[in-house]
Length: 307
Image 1: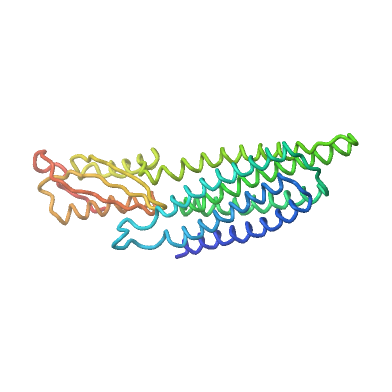
Image 2: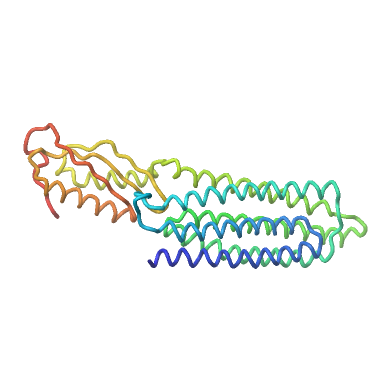
């Protein structure tokens, strides 16, 4: 329950911070007529939708398995991450569209200082919240929170880029009186969009791989093998090791061949011990071990040590 409470708490913080930033950026963007600030408002709007999706995912992914979902609801988090990645792509396309329009039909900017100020605030807020999301998401293996953190991390980069663009416009027009640098604003927005595309691609790869039941990482698979090998005295061989991940749950399955002389109880105790030690090193793992008799001479692996 503490884990689920932490996840919901940080997801709520993301929803609140994004709501405030959308309002602030829209107000300032319309006030000074900056397409890059308005593009950031769009970006934050997409972030808000993503935060709401993440909140829904973390609120439901922790539910226990049921008749319709025998493997639990963990993939809600991966589905959430994939949807959030798609939203980032959409936001980037919208930003580029608006920026090209503004390049073709340039408009002067007023009160650039307001834009610089709101972008600075946005960068600092999103930097703080994204770090919190990454921390909790990594500790709880929450793909939804990690995806939301990536959303806000891209917002930190993009807000900083817009802030630099507005500062260049202000400085350029102060130094070169009569010369307009309005083109810098939409160009900065396009650069922002390209950075968003890159982040969206990485997020898509991370989200979709678990939906496709890609095996666990090499380090995690090696951990499983190491635990099995620690009990080499008690079995003849093992095979068909299969792994996958669903949300925060790692699923591990393999066949373990033991001496035909080993009692059912000893076989059960052995699989319980191996499962417990794998879970100790890979928290939230779901272990399934199929015990089979080996064809080796009687006595091999027949002495099970309960220690």
